[in-house]
Length: 612
Figure 1 (spheres, rainbow, N blue to C red):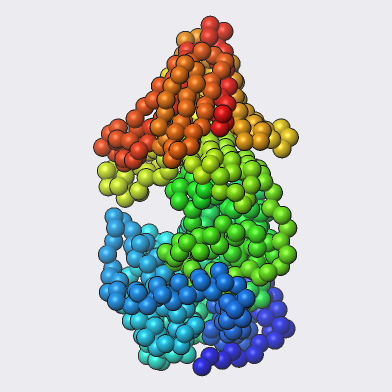
Figure 2 (cartoon, one colour):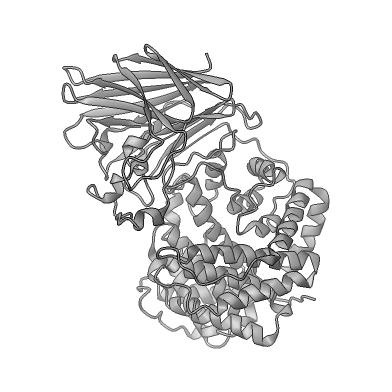
């Protein structure tokens, strides 16, 4: 039913040389300008591309999937669950072009989920009912008036979904259907980025998503649009590393683990697509820190299955498509152990790229032991410890430096989370829905000190597990540093996050000893009498006895003992919105410790977390 025309390694290499030569001509050219034509690109490039299906999975990959299923019961369960979901979703009405606020993004993402799921189900089962339903959905979005180019992520994701399903079902679509879908990929997708797009230069997840989506679209239709594809690939290659600096140096994705899954998904999609068609990945996978970011993401999930959700992120763990690709590349299947548990429990099936997890499933290579701690530098440096990878009741402690001066960041420098006995005792409230804030006039993407962004409770320092002075905001441009003192202690310099004149020096150290964590804050040079506030958010019940607090949840307890500067402990209900900008925080409260700075401007507090 599906056939690949043969392609030699020499042909692929020749094509890559041509591509590199053309890219050199435009390396310093703005994406707003057309790249200098290259005579090496005269004529079609299709001589160096394999036949359809060629994106992300070849015919051989589909055949190997059946072999892998027979030897891995968790993979087999995943495929069975995907087929079950594909059948259940057959009754869904086709998607419509309905914006949510200024975005079509939800529709684009749901299209990816549906089209890949039904295309995958057809390729695995051969049942035409899945082919027919995928075709119907593809033609529906192809008929949209546009894919909302004013918010280009929407275009990039819709192009991605249509490109993959077009490629996977190429030989089973009628010629007129292919023409209609191909025209939509071109006119509503890649033609707008022929000579690049402003998003190609972005240093955040937008650059990864928009370049990845446009390249997938281009590679899907290359034989019919060789000149357009040539120009787009040259522009994409010239800009591809702009957004990859985010991983440098140690793989800590500065927008948090949730956005790691998003941006990195499109980077590995790009790598897989380029490798399968051009025989190169433009050096993407060797970008500093990118491979190590798989360890960052694995460590960012606690033994209880909750993420260290700093920046704009949620606590619930994601299955994380790129983790599977990178685990396979690194021959480190141990990185996906937590995800195996998700699949056993029927979780993660809403991941729109879930079929690719099955196709990119890591083999059974002997795994190297995964360390119990992780620390990494970058704009948002982190240190993470756990007492075990296999015990759901293990201790988990994670802390971060950095601060608000980065895409999707919060005023959360010094913030931490703690899990023990399967309970998240110290939590991050997480992100707030963007539309809910934009619809209320919040200047959400303005990170300056006076921005209305920082009037939102969840985003400012008052909501985070950190230090505040005189109820003021942190400095929006200050970024805290983090260094390790041996393997068991992290030392953060929080001085840059306080406003000018508030302090001379502020440090926070975190030390892990067995199942005990000790957090120590030292401040000097504060104005005498200034009010210094320590805070920690939790869903646990809190009882206070002098300088000790006992947290209780699910029949478990955690003791929190304060020493140093005499402080007043208090429990604050933060479940209700403070203003009409804020969302509710169900069953959430804060444990706070407050005291004035001494006459010499000093303030010191040590907090010990333990079972007893």
